[in-house]
Length: 347
Image 1: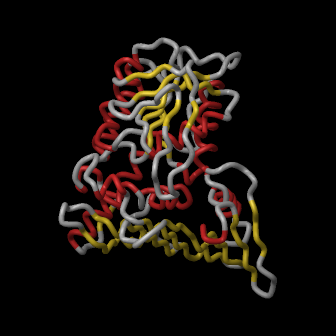
Image 2: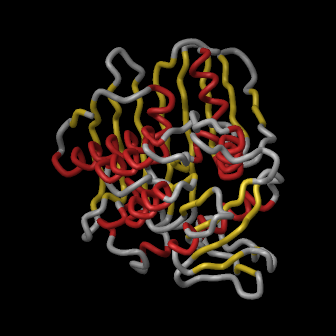
């Protein structure tokens, strides 16, 4: 990077897209001393008298966000990119807009945190990567599970083989259909990628985070009339093991759940959101199960903190990279082809 942001002052952030994820990111920045919410941008939904109303999501409708009078309010991304005070552009807009907006922000010399998926296709993600290579700004996909308590801990357990070799792993992420998908707010199911690209990609990315790129995938699922895969079960093939599979769905009648089960040589590691957002369990043969509690903030807070730290230090993000965002899409595209053809698909 040619001109890293000075650590002597907070990083000025503009959050673009003020739906559920935009509001979630705003809350994460709000209590971070090293960041300052300098601006917000949305073509429709804007704060009134410095207050952004709470937004409904999988976890209900949180409280309103009091931004204050100092926060600039824009309706167009061009206005954000033309503001010299903005260091970091946080894109929480609909997936079909990511590529164009991320490329524009990078060309303007801004740092970019982009909500997942990085783009609708891996080809579009590649275009973003090309723009990032010639930009002085940093680019990071917001793959929050890499930062989630009980999941980032799992990465350490796998790398260090704390309980021996990993034999098998199962991930599960189920949700009711998002209201914006039901209403077609941001386009058709195929435009947005359905549950496969919007929800299941979290686990696809975490699988590659733990084990690297699979050689191939075999997936079955449920395809909506619009053509999107809204329920998927995938086996990720790793020659020599481990046996890995994941399930993702928008077909849950109500609510949201996520979990994993990791079968090691000497223990079983489990996480289930139903037991609490920060609790994982270690189950060893002949021993009482141990609950491992994590006091760190949730993954949304941890990921924005990390991005801000990278900007201040002038160091490109490494926990999750732009290339990771592209390869996660490549794996999901292979899963989609497998669902539609019934065949094993190489990655």
